[in-house]
Image (cartoon, rainbow, N blue to C red; front, side, top):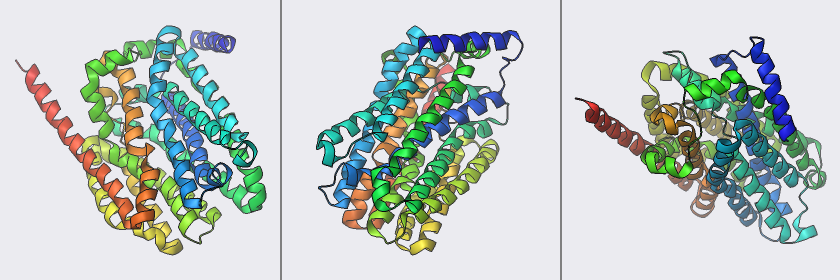
Amino acid sequence: MAQATSTMEEDARRLHADGHGQVNPGEIAIGVIIGRTSEFFDFFVYAIASVLVFPKLVFPNFDPLTGTLYSFAIFALAFIARPIGTLIFTEIDRRQGKGAKMTIALFLLGVSTVAIAFLPGYETLGAASVWLLAAARIGQGLSWGGTWDGLASLLALNAPEGRRGWYAMIPQLGAPIGLIVASALFAYFVDTLSAEDFLSWGWRYPFFVAFAINVVALFARLRMVVTPGYTELFETRELEPSSVPETVAQQGRTIVVGAFAPLASFALFHMVTVFPLSWVFLFTRETIGRFLIVECVGAVVGIIAMLVSGYVADKVGRRTLLAGSAIAIAVFSGFAPQMLDGGLAGELAFMILGFILLGLSLGQSSGSVASSFRKRYRYTGSALTTDLAWLFGAGFAPLAALVLSSRFGLSSSGVYLLSGAVVTLLAISINRQFASRDAEAVQP
């Protein structure tokens, strides 16, 4: 592993010496999209399997609803482990550099993903299959804490004046792209294989594909972050790792506000991706392959909405767009979940409306994070903020929504989404108050 990283660094130096190591926002954008797409593909492969496979494979002694709830509980473990991964890999980054950190993190992610692909079921291993799945999921979460490469922050800080909203949107494109690939892959296996073959071996292939994509993403991203040009740019922008305890002590307020500001976007993220799949699978007669295609259609709409968000944010401001999106999400939470019981037309309406809002809000959810931190803490602070935003906003969303909707009806699942919108508006308001006070404090 060390030899591979060393060879990569030597190649990068030669490229830089030949004049090909120049850094520009377009190159950064490509690296960010590759990295985010691979991470989100991993994410959605597991999410889809947590609905279609694991309740039957690992929890066969429970009814489908209970098995899915247990599966969602294991799903949340990665989000709990992610901040711990950031703590561990930040120290590796400080001592060994970004190349070593990313190589180890992506190796752990690949091993965890392949381990799931080979997972025996409960009928073979008994309760040990549950513990193995949980361990692999924790491994994925730890590795996500180490895959933070700082490229998204670097992109935001190097965006041309007047185009920062557009460039802040680019990293988020990985989410709908990853969903499209994962959903299409599972739809193919669900529609072409018998139920027995799919549950026996068909579901394992997307995990092998995820491993292959991770390998490609590793080399693509390493060729960027270890080049002298990028290393110099990280240093001049002060995007270097700081101690996690020190960062929390010095920038705790900014981390908390930054984590809660995009809560509406992150809650909506799972409410239009993972939760609808579980509801349709458990409580309707809709064929799951067709609904996965519906998710692909929604994701395409989400991509278009994200592109629009970049243009709108540059006109009205990112915080204004986030606040407006949160209000729209609050309205959406009051009526939209019931559409999932409206057949194909209702499902399409829910997914299209949901992905329009998701694209507009998620497209700018991390746009102003890096600039909110003092330079010394920008790199680690941005990583921690992202970790906590996913933990509080998305980690438990499928579990909470399924519990509420199964006990109190579909409309009750909107309560979780509404709470996220309210918290986002409060966080934006608090952030503005803090910004005003800080500005007054520095005035002579």
